[in-house]
Picture (cartoon, rainbow, N blue to C red):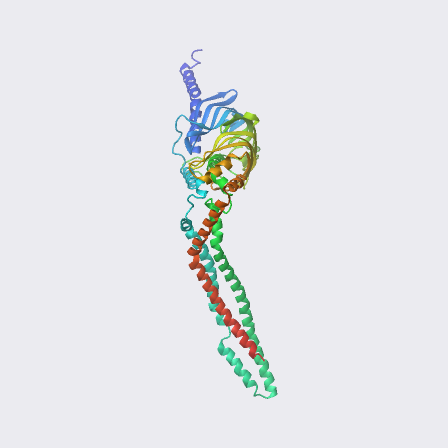
Length: 567
């Protein structure tokens, strides 16, 4: 019996099994952290991993995904994740989870140590560019108030000089082409010698007998009519070209006023006060929006996957290739069919407990054939209710993601609206209702968010800005309800943020006529600067128009002369 059992072989087998058993969890943990960190561009960490064969399950304890833009904060943190896996699919190198449970999910949490690993260069460059844009748009409300320093029109013109001169040059180039064309066309006009020849022939006809006179008169009339036809054609073309050059000249003369009207709101100095709320709230809103879009873009890059019509690129030389053979019921290489979520949203210091469900999570949606869907419901203090429903369809091009959301009875407290040293504004308390939607079609944004604030209480601590700032501070503190509408356009990498609110009207009424006069004077000064800057190009257009006028005078003179001598 002892000869039948090779004890050293059995011991070696048990040792190998023990090594595999003990090494599985560390290997899985290392794989998830390495692949995740590479995909995110910052540390992805796990406290522990537990893999079980019967049933096939995977448990992850405390997942932390670092925010690449803020390495001391996590974009996402989950207390526990459990996945029920398809064991046979794992043997086919497919990660298929029938169910996943994510517990204690939180966002934008603090880290104990930095999660920076160098990141992805392109992503970091985009973040730095966005941050530079936000800093360039940093706004102090005191800049738009009367009695304080207004932007220098000369400085605005200096910044816009190249663009404005380019626009004028485009108009001038079109007018110059018309002028060059007429330098050639005017040669088609019957000259004075031709007119004098017709006149001499008419004099000769008077000395002819009746028979010859009739034939000569008919021949002369035909020749003059041919010349008049050429003159008529040139005259009609001249009318069209002069109208066009006149239109170009009018556009050039109107450009200073139009540009002044456009540039003043861009600096927060429009004829009205529509830009003030945008400037007051824009920096904080931009930060939230850009943070959300970066998270969405990062997730979208991972889940967009390969569409049905796309083919896998050839692998680098020396590396293997994953070949997918035809299947009756194909499955993606990565798929989570159903995921149950629960966690906390911390919004402006007000936590909202939520639970939800995500279905069809895969990076190969064309193979799975179903869009990813999301449903979340949450509740917070004071009766706040959150609802989010979405569909993310990347099965074919163009991809289309749709998200609808609402948040009712949400309470704000001590929210900083403006940290201006001249006029700091804090929203001490308010209740708000939000509803909106987001549509992303192949990277292009279309979103609207409507909000209504009630029971608002502002603290506007005016400093030493003078009477105007004091009056504005009192007006803001008297606001107890207002509306806001936020819109998003552009692309994920270059979003366009629009913000409108009836706070503009309240602030405009508070500032009153004194500010309007000062703003009107600033606009007038800017228009004068633009006129001076563009005057040489506008005069050049006027000179081209005068040259066409001279050509038209020649056409009219020949036309009159030919009609006078036509028998």
